[in-house]
Every structure is written in C-alpha cells, then in structure tokens.
Length: 179
Image 1 (cartoon, rainbow, N blue to C red):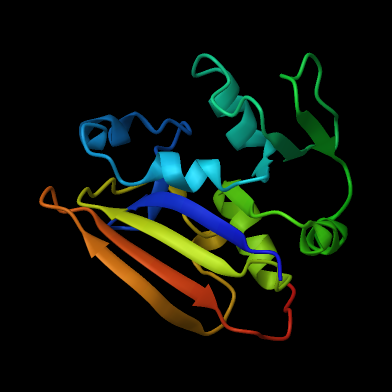
Image 2: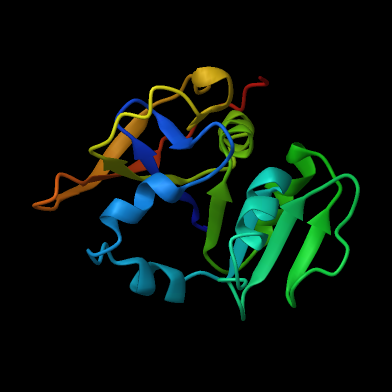
C-alpha cells in the first residue's frame, strides 16, 4: 500500500501559516533537526495546492529539486521548476492516481487540500509537528477549521526540549465522505 502522508507543522491553535500564507513564524524553530532530511529522502512524489506552491516558489530557490511535484491548478503553471506538473483533475481522480503510485507521497499542503484528501479517504498518515506558538489567526490546518470525521491510530510521539511535539497518526480505513 502506498503511504500518502500529510507531514506538516501547525501552531498549537491549529494554523499552518499566517493570514498572508507566510510561514515565517516557523523560523524560530529552525535551529533544531526534526528529521526532515530522512523524511524527504524517502519521498517519491509531492502534492500541494496552488496557494502553497506560489508561496514556496516565491520564498526563494525551489526546495524540492529532484522530486516529482503535482500542483492542483486549474489554470496550469507557467515556467515551473523541473519535475513540477499541474494537476487539473478533481480530488477523486487525484486520490486514485496517488493510491496507484509505487512510492511514498508527501501532501505538503495547504489545509484545503489536506481536508479534501482526508474526505476522499486518500491520506494514510498524518505526521503533525505541533509548535509551541499561538498565531490567533491564519490558514487553518484543515479547511473551514474542521477536518472531516474519521478515526486515527497513534503511531508515534516525539518531543523536543524547545516544546515541539510530533504526533504521527495512521488514518484508519474509512468510507470516504464529501466535504
């Protein structure tokens, strides 16, 4: 079975980015190694929403060189970095495509995509890094502030002295629901 994981940092109050899409609030936590290099080395394909793609692209050099990246975008992508493709289909067709891939898939974000793929039954893991920060407002981890209903099985926890907590869950088999 292909592992399809949402691997993402969230503030304690459930936001993955500031209102403008910025993740600059995470800079305070960058001095610690949370195992990203090992995680990234095991990924074959990345998936992200268009707003996340635009935010990453405008943050500097493309950080996912050498990996295939699908970006949900109805309008296509001009001048995309090597390996980046626009996915113009719906979430159901994306879910089926991802399930057929032989490699590990990382759903980078954003919240609308994560919630949508959860609703389609397309995520197998949630790997959440809860950061000791309260943003108050911003882009929620799950679109609309509420994930679709479902059961999770805790796989692992990890803590760091700076207050970061990693919660890794398996998404239990469930009948897909529509948002």
